[in-house]
Image (spheres, helix red, strand yellow):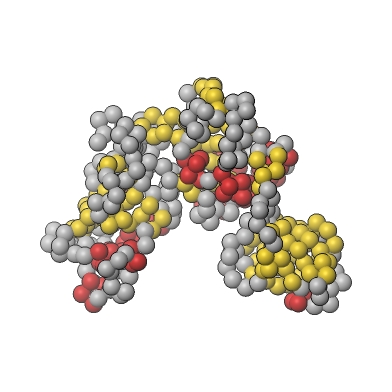
Length: 384
């Protein structure tokens, strides 16, 4: 059996043991057309680029009569949709282009057991470092009891009669991985249902394998990456159309594989709609807070295209801020602050949460941030 079939089979077993957690959304008409069909398949193209979750239920109507139903099995680029027909047929429809399509979100299932993978303490990240990584159950002991199976394995067992609005499972199994590649292998083999990675860690292979498109992603104690600058350079010089803004975008794409979420700098009140001619060509020299573990690599990347005589250029200082952190729980390199953050928000630090696509409706209902809150990242000794 291939890795793909193994993972899908494992997910199916988990969901088969689950009880339904139904969606309340009503069917909505789709702006879509049926391109081609065969006995048990239909290929549909959307007129817009809306994302479609596997398991989305479709109803096909021909001249007001329901002729078939099906479920989305795959989506390519958010537009070409593969549908497995579960009843009826489109074989006798004279004009596939005239078929009306109604869509319902997938029925959300609450698994009995959820197997989670997280980075272990000491696993490097360019943006933060954790001396200790401590899994903690939802609602801090009121919903689950914790069994430490080893220093890398934990089990949360739901307390009898515990009630929660969120669809938490009966049992949560947590494993910590020292190496990201080992976590990827466990996910691909079906040993994990969900794998959480530091920003930029997942390989192109596992991203393609899980159809990773940037959702869901959760926030840890990494918070925000903000920029501080002097009067010689303004916020507008960090917009996406400026040289400094383009360099920051390239850093996200090349060092973090696009996992950081850009703040909407251009929409900040008081900024002009477009970059002036003077700001359009403003170069900036970046200085990264030395409390950030990968500051040297970040500075080297950000300043690689600057001229040799760069000391005279206006400087921009990057630091990591977590406005909502509490004393003693922030990760190393975090600057404590209250809103507003002391600088211009450049990126929100987000951690990829990868799984089989069929499990994503459940993860969306649970919330990626809720999964991240199951992990406490304690700072390296001596860190700020």
